[in-house]
Image (cartoon, rainbow, N blue to C red):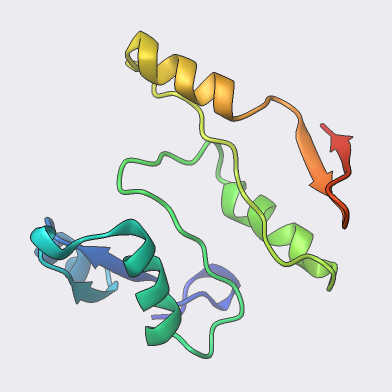
Length: 123
């Protein structure tokens, strides 16, 4: 089922199989006891060899706006871009520790990285 931007959603799931199928996702079931974030992301690359762009999200991610996916895809218009990452914001009911982790690890200003580790701030 192609989605917006020609994307083919694939959901790696160990919990809500029926819901995923009902939403039209291609589902690859992984037993919870075998789940590993890195291995699962690598498996996605293997299962979708024709994909140019992969968007990885956790099951509890909430997009900040309807344009979030388009905003992630936009930088790929530049052929020099190899990876893009979105900022994680704390949930409204986040614990103080979760709130601190998101605000500490994810700056409020975007940075365009260039070779050599130097970056250019972008808002």
